[in-house]
Length: 110
Image (tube, rainbow, N blue to C red):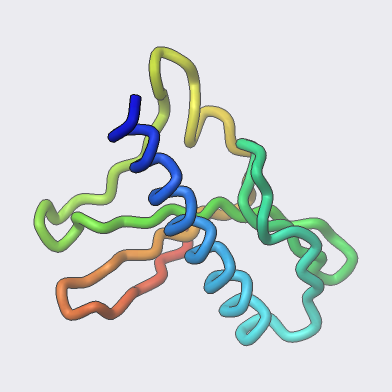
């Protein structure tokens, strides 16, 4: 359990930092929004905002191997149970693509 358990918490911390960065990006780009929740620990979404009186949900995914593989992977099952795209209630997915030079590109998909 030790190794995988440690990786889970390292990955969780990495993902939560990415969610905070995306929340800040949304505030800069979408004037007048209110961040309701940017540290959602549930599986339905990662960030919830109010935009023009409407709740909008975002799922944030970190992509760290795209420069190696040329692919973005979307999880739909984990340990035999639905997850990722099958369980999210998000209106938008934001992929944070980590490049070899340390830069991060953000791609939004509806």
